[in-house]
Image (tube, rainbow, N blue to C red; front, side, top):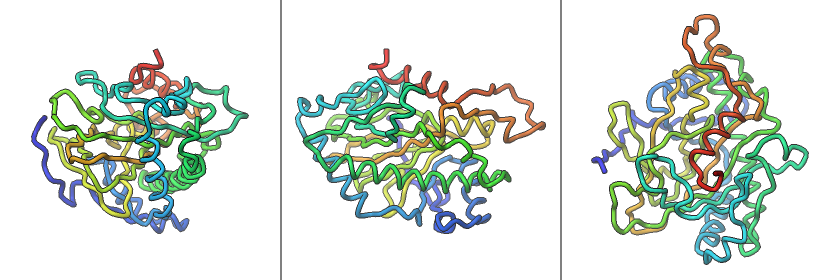
Length: 315
């Protein structure tokens, strides 16, 4: 474990996106999003419009789920379509570390008309012993997805693109929502993390932190920074697909979680991704001036490769 520094305001900026939420093409906000994504790739957003009461209810329902015996949680064990409960040790985000200490519960958009178009799409698995989770989870998914759309509009404007550039193939998104539970780590093993150092696979991640903390972000110098909770905010970070799409202009930043607080920690996550056939090609953004060798690829193919490597159940 390397020494962790306290974050300063200029390292992880806080950006009010309320104008984007209201439908405005706010160039100043877009410039702020652009600047943050070119540097650390992590930011806090306020003015996002999500219902704090909904977030709190989902948080409480999530705790009910994770505090239940494993025998009950196994009734919704993760499916081949990445829906349901992943127990501790079933994910490994860092090849050089032990399997992650966290548990997760995952769900997504449920549209039976499109279940066969990708392996990461399928029926959600809702637990009977936490009956509120279905309605709360679906409501959160829809609200967080709208925030992601506003952010993608802002990124497009910041890149000098048409406002809807990133939103042309979003009717059948591969986005996943998850509750991520981190038990307290009483003893710190240098190779054991709540979640090991990693970059996120997809386009964009939105994170609701609780009050416990434990999220750490690696800066360009390789130093680890605490990303403490800020009440009412969402943590937003660039994923690998958006880095590829922008030819590296936007940074997908390594991050990890170490929960040595003495308390349990619960995060609510939306991993935002467009339709599986969406072509991720730097040339579509950089144009003829792009002279790199990053290939064009589809969102669906890329996610399939990354999930196979990270999750043991997919072997």
